[in-house]
Length: 268
Image 1 (cartoon, rainbow, N blue to C red):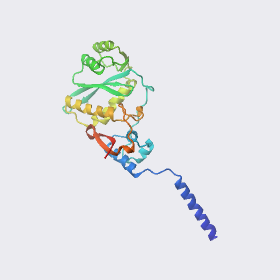
Image 2: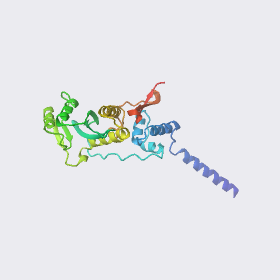
Image 3: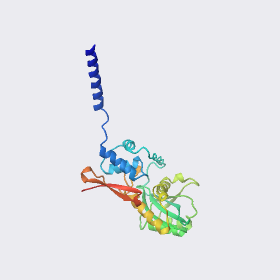
Image 4: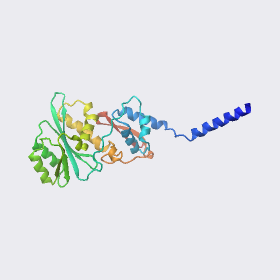
């Protein structure tokens, strides 16, 4: 009887050991620490953004694993924007206005021009008194020479007057208007404005027009060159090269006044 019990005990531990060896491999401590460091340094980031940075550092890891390694006290990331346009259209751009309130309770108007293929912000400007003539001039600055898009998507705001429409005709661009009160018909521009607010303007106090222009300049530098996008296969509008472990140690570079960070490998 005792011999049978010993044999059963050995068989049980053999089964346990075999299943432990065939289980999912553990995550290295260095990687776990790096994910947590990124999450703490960038409280506005979710698992997709952190995974995008890790992929640019040559670290292959799934988004689910990144989510599992992130601190549990963080709010879950917001839902991604529903893809209304399945295939980005070459030669399509969109424009939008949004307002920003300053510390002295003045309203400033920000005009942005977005090229759709790689979500590039090709131009922006700030004014306190927008007019159709001023808006038309912004289109000339956004698309010099023969760089104008074939189609321009915009809403039905009255600021886009006859002078603006005449300027588009001179550029050879066809207007595409959204339906009244239907911002979802211009998803890329609306999502851009939402990102600007959530990732930048909701966390700063704007002093004036010059200050706002400086803030947005810093954010768009980060947005174009560093920020990874779900719709671009976790790449930035200006493509970032993948740096393998042989490139050196991982360093943290503050951007947008420390609201966000870029991670690169540099030789010691």
